[in-house]
Length: 229
Ligand SMILES: [Zn+2]
Image 1 (cartoon, rainbow, N blue to C red):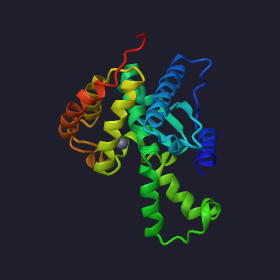
Image 2: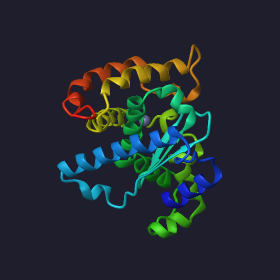
Image 3: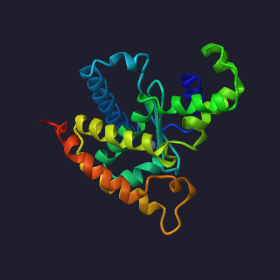
């Protein structure tokens, strides 16, 4: 289902051509390094089979929205609006590490199963599911294209913490300084200004998130190999 929905999203949005634009090349480069780090991490843990069927693809889409998301199967989208908040390559790595963790850890699948149960949709195999308009609808709410997910729409607090935790590790393994997570989330918090938009209202309180990131930093640094070393 992810493949079909991703193709549809691409056809309906303005994908920035990587050959002509430095920024699109940046997204592919950072994304590929994060994906390699994840492959390596899963291999070390003997969990490579969990990534079976992943075919990574990274696209930059022209949009002022400050967002990014990853579908199961490794289909990733970054919106150009996010780049003004990430501001540097390491911060983009932090966001991609976070979003890809949601996908590989099956967070969307957890939420999708809950929604399918809640709506009492008859489950009779994957094909039946992917042909059911209700299921497609849930898919689009849980994953990217509805714009209700990604950086802007946090998952449960537990899932957010997990994504922050492994996102830091994957960014560090990919050669990016995990410390960049802190100024990045501070910039995200400022976006809300004095009246935070609804999408931030469920976020773990910003101070709480930053405190947690600081606690996770020593572990992440054990994985950090700066590029070129
Ligand atoms: Zn998240």
